[in-house]
Length: 332
Image (tube, rainbow, N blue to C red):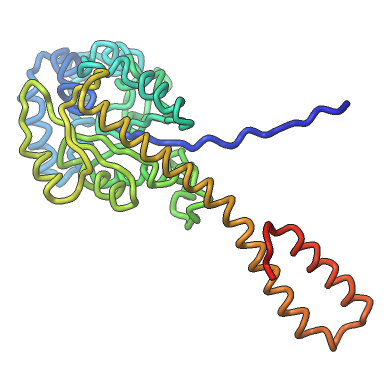
């Protein structure tokens, strides 16, 4: 007796995209260990970096990356990947972040949804890769360095600012993950997308996240603005919500009973329901499309019948009848 093999339906995917600094962590990641290691306080470093950018018409992110290299040489503290990874282990995270990913994954799985988590940050990729959440991330898009043969940072390999962050939303949707993959600019039908835009969630904290927030929301996805629970400063999120740039706002509390968790579950529920509807419509469309093809072929047969041999016409009518028989219900 032969076995019948069945193919499980492909599960729908959701992409949750996060900024990092002040979204998952309370401050800029460089502030906690990296900048103090040069004997500077954060304000002094950022003031100098911003002035460097202003006086040389530089991108702000390129300025601080350059500044780090200069201070590392001055202090004879080479910037290496392993050093950044060690720093990443010490970066504090908001309440509940450490268990957020597994909890959200489990909830979505019960709804038949697969979740992928992405970071899109102006911060340093190598620090994020050393953090406790790194194993849960599908991809980290962040500023990064080019390293010498000895493993020392010598030049920016990637500098991400608030405007070029949006390219990574397109990369995730289209499945063109590598930063150098120019296929991200190719036109792609919705059916070909790796993750539909309406299944993308973006979580961020500030004005630098606005382009991504607007893009995701305009494409039918969901944008969430977060704010520091301790400071409770809500001006930004009120403005973002009032301007129609976000769907929700909440404290950056990722614990199980937080508003953020509740909103995320609502989004997953809505996407799961929509996926069920889409699956039902796909089934209904099969008969409707088959009927459309049947009527079109029947009309063509009536038109060409006088001009082709009877034998060929008989085969054509047999094919049309077979197509008709495959359609559910009475279509006469």
